[in-house]
Length: 530
Image (cartoon, rainbow, N blue to C red; front, side):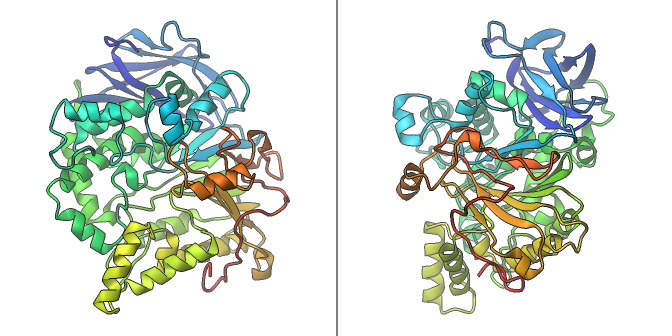
């Protein structure tokens, strides 16, 4: 967009169902935003946060299985599609229960330049590659893109981001080259989503997002010790408040179906508001401060209906219980909510969690042991050494929270056994974080009375450093599947999952028999993944 355009960022096509959709934008000033399609128009007034202006336009009464070309106007000036663009028009494709749903997923995308230097250091941007392939008609259009964390990196900034930071404060001032406040977060999101191809693909493929640590900071909520240490720094409070506030604005509200959005305590302030912009700065800052003290007081997790299947996007960061006497990936309220969502009578059940639920067995065991050795009943030298190791090598996945792991695995087995309705064909965990891709599957689930296949699919990174060992695995064909290996479910309404962006990065969930690859282990239904 031009420097004088009233459209700063977007449009992002966020929620899409059978009858509803939402479109998100950032505007340059207070505005009335209009999305027009098929001879109809939907409107929303902008709201303001920390001096930045946004709108989420809700579309309703759409027909299932239809594709609607749309345009965006701000105060009656058409701003999208951009003039002179060689990319296709933007459109909304509503869900159709009579056909298979295609779900793409991945995580960990840094926003560095698309040049030879950064291709060598960070790899080719897989999301941008997907966008260009989709624009040429070479890749199928996904019904939803699940982005499983690290959509932005607040602690590893690009040269362009550092230039912006340096224009407003000294890089010698804590937190240095990292993000400090909302203004810097807003610029970080602009860098992440402004490339023309990225901007276009996010305007045509609905996105479902959840945060991971780098959206806030590396190792966010790893342990009680980490939490205490970071809170002693002079800059952390503002960083956390800005990170969660900007997450609500840029990611969270677009995640929600209209009925879930209507129940959101902050969004409710916009319902029935009078003329003029509503300023959500104060309420959002108060919310961010509250949820850090009382994680159970607000829910970041949510669900998406995918035809006859369901996607659960699970908060694996803010909802943690970190007290040394009781650690869990999910607090009691979050676990109770998950219990309600884990049901049968679905074709397929997907659980999006930024951190892999099923790790390679040796790594899972190491994380479980580290949790025990860092416990409060251990001698202080052992506790301190293990805590330091845990933070250095990121021993903070589900295996390091054994209580929560066992409770969630029991829910999975209950669904797979048909105790909560007809068992789905598959129960698939979708994850990222670990900067390599793999597919793992629970062996012999029938031996534990389960009818569903239980799968872990990991696709990471979309664009970031990959470990040397992982790159070697990909080179010899062990770490990925080609984009044409998309696999349909066992019936025409089944869901299929992949990140169809290139053979070097893509985890494919095949919901049909295949030769087994990758790490496998049969969890004991009573003890979890041993």
